[in-house]
Image (cartoon, rainbow, N blue to C red; front, side, top):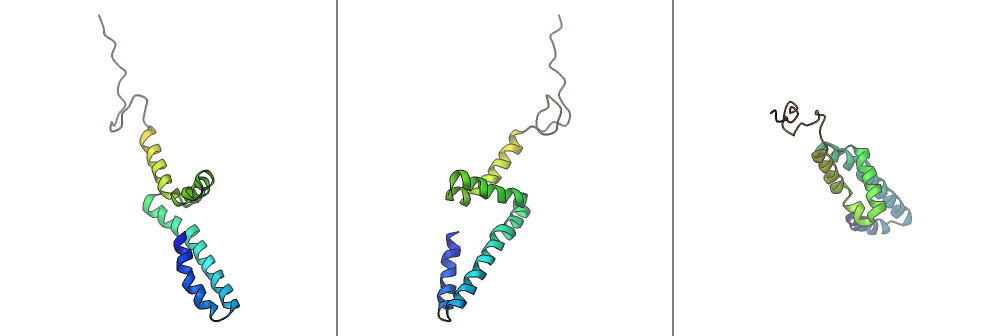
Length: 115
């Protein structure tokens, strides 16, 4: 987030040597490029790398940003991956009742002691 501002400063200073119209066009181009990169390209790449749907990534940025502010926005993608991993680990998969992870068939019910 801050890197974009720092990286755009030289371009805007150079554009200022050609007039305010050039500064406005340069600023507009930088905003459009940043928005396309942050809201389209990065979520699509994250989907391919971490199997997160791009829409979930965007909602995570908004949600974590609403709850935790700037730090929530910065850590939205890693926190989303942690949450998804935790849910996949702790949620029982589509197995029958009484089965354990790694078993192919459900266990029979516990035997009652016959006397």
